Length: 536
Image (tube, rainbow, N blue to C red; front, side, top):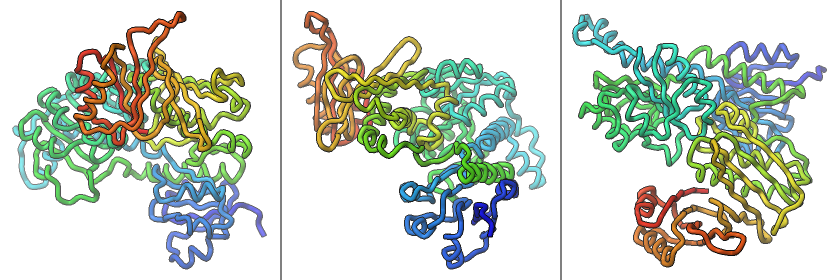
């Protein structure tokens, strides 16, 4: 009987993936046509399984996979695998996160060129026996400006291809270092308004979050150059389709190309029949090469997992000693939240993230804390799902350095975690610890001021002129907006002689997120210098 690992290919993948498994010396079975009964009966035989999206690994199914060591997903998402259940059983879950980036970038460029030259309409006319040359005059891409909102892997590939067409490229993504923009020869926009003012074409490549939903909406379309063309090959809902229709009808937007939609599949759409709109049925990742690449990359990771190699796309946490993990686990939520708060306070491009671990925990393997900080800094700001394995790679692609230092001495508290975001010459530091029997995370420092506040729910952080009556004004303004304050703490600067400075910082937790309009209203008042909202 062979001692070689046994792998089941449960769904159809490209031949290169199957060949990679066989070349590694594995026994490979194809179960593409198996019924559920056969699958359940045979599953305990396998060390690894390669799937796409049709097979769901629930906790119950994972319990039946008594010999399983790795699940490979030939694609980006892993929604069909219960990660917690797999991790509990010690099963590595891997995917193929880079399998479709080239395909998505190329589809974006194809749609941009099709918009510029009216290719779909010209093709449809010719097939209908029409010669409409005089009606279909287009525009050149040469010398035009492409605006990219979201400058991750796909956005950067789009930029490279647009530069090959002699386009000028401007991009907005505060979570990409300034050096990375320079390396790619792309103009760095300070905000999306800078793109609206300059771009002839705008493509959006953001993750789908509550903050990014409707990013290109009525307000944005009111700021764009008249005649701009809009592209969305990222996520449905990033473009407000109703607002886009209004802008198209008004002539403010000259054309649009959508590959993704709020609800899919879609057969009836409000923009059907528009001559200047291209609609494609989510083809961004649909090429033979991408499908084959997904199977091959997932198979490579299965081979690494079963042969003692380096697994680079696991979505589970990397292995850390049990004793270290027991000590560090209470600090992971703290580190994650500090990472999120630090980048929000920075508010600009991120060049480096410095993680300092102080106190008794500094004697441990503190990688989980650094990874939690990085995950907090990146989550919801990248096209990819961020996890402990891929976070360093995503940061590297964006030109973000990460440093980690430890010191067994900590002042005032037994343990501390400090996170500093460096942006050019500016440094934004936050400090926290855990307190109490339940190890609740507490914020101790932000924007140069010190206090002690339990981190939970929704944060509002305000910097204002330190003068009598400000705390009451803040409470009144939030009350007028219907926002409940749950906790509040004030920190103010003191010099060595104990004299107070001119500014103070107030950190507030609220029962619901503070709306952007509410924050803007507060900052418009006299005496308020800056403010941020953070949902934890």
